[in-house]
Image 1 (cartoon, rainbow, N blue to C red):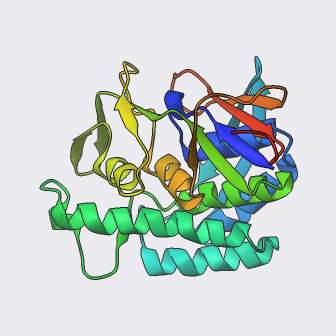
Image 2 (image 1 turned 180 degrees about the horizontal axis):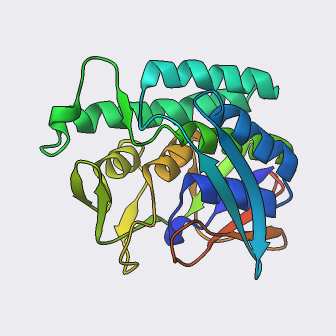
Length: 246
């Protein structure tokens, strides 16, 4: 099956999981995989809700603020095995994490505000340890639907404004988001959202899925709307037969 995401409204990890459930992925499978991944690091509870036609995830997570990339890879591997997620979706999950780790390593060694946080040859996922939860949700959702191809419509709308984190304030797109999108040749543009619409995890999902561009939404296929924790327009997800034109 072919997954098409209208990323002009942005993208985040939890939104991806919600969108996949909205398209018909088994919610117990997706939420269960997300909880298993999160619990490799700390107490985790995940549920899915749908209100006024918009799907969202509710995630409670108590884990470390920062996570070394090698430990993240080990935990992700354990989670994929525990969930029984195999080829090709486990490999997709690995690529998503690699995209994030590569970005974190690059921006923390170069960005003026983040450079002092670079702690050695192994990338550190600063304030992103919950990425394992989002990756597991994406992998489980795509497996449930049989997704083997991913497309994005037009460009990624990254939002605008700034993002606050424990060490200061960053402009949107954050350095990690911008690094991932540009490294993987995914076009992006600022929008008038007034806040972050595309997160590093959302960008990493596109990169890890080796998403290709599509000109428009496919016709005559499944559609779902998904939102996150911010007051932003929902993101549209489409599920089409792989034989359909992107």
